Amino acid sequence: MNTYLVLKTIHIISSVLLVGTGLGSAFYLFFANRSGSLAAQAVVGRLVVRADWWFTTPAVLVQPLSGIAMAHMAGWPLTTPWLALSMALYMLAGACWLPVVAIQIRMARMARAAHAAGTPLPSEYARLQRWWEGLGYPAFIAMAVVFALMVNKPALWGG
Image (cartoon, rainbow, N blue to C red):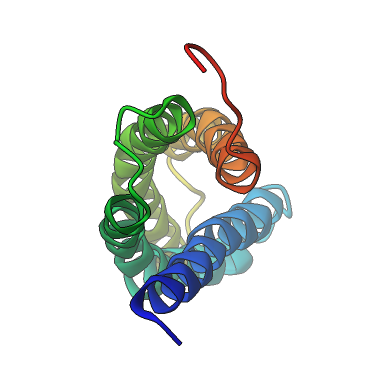
């Protein structure tokens, strides 16, 4: 196998980890937050934060490194329209994801503390939950469009 195909394999696997972990984490925390179970919120919140550190963060770093290396090897300038749009959308997703990480860490701490103390969640939790969800939707949509651009490599503007 040549270097390009090794990079492509790494790129695809890391993209699956990135989007798959994000979607799975969002699914479980979304429903844990609606379950009425503080114990579920505490456990799922802790595991979502862990998944981000173990899977999402490394994939976030691998994606641009492997993608830029492949573009260089294939002779695609980074100004190629589908590639430039993909990078812009990736940065948009990242701009949403960074605050989400901080928010979910705070949410997990609040849920853990409330569960340990046997008290209800503070009202701030609901506010953070709305921000967490509100930032998650555009990040996921951006990444779905990036997948479509990567697969189809459309001409877009300027041919």
